[in-house]
Length: 172
Image 1 (tube, rainbow, N blue to C red):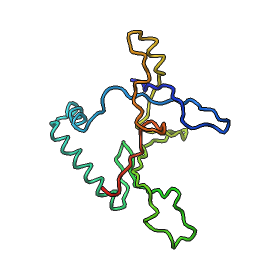
Image 2: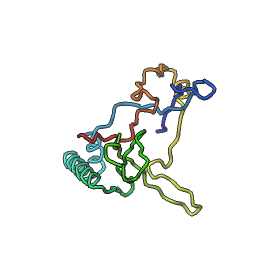
Image 3: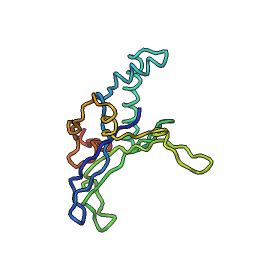
Image 4: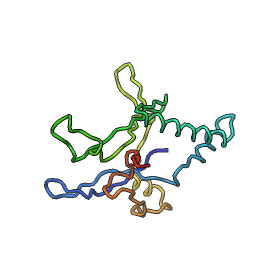
């Protein structure tokens, strides 16, 4: 199925004072939970949903442990997870003055795995074969579908599409 997108108006103005419009992906259906992922994987293999769920939970625990030990975690065919810190607006002039009190956010960065073709073209394995369809085009073709595009909740007040980049609370 293609990824659906719609237009959204940026809250930020350009230098000319205009609010520009950009594409935003439309989420469809419910969020897929770990339990549902376990059921879907079990349907494609010879193990039970409970076994898959147990492995996924253990994977998450081991990944967290390795990330918090300063390592990156690479899952073949998926990508690499790495912790990065941000110190937005808290820079200091001397290297010896750098301290942990400057850290404003800890983030888990994900980089999808990629392949290089003979022509030196890079393809992200996770995004191979992606197609896009504008939501208005889909609703025009299917007149029975609801055309109320504004019912899609915007989880991010900054208009960032709701993906916080994998924020990890350092206090947790």
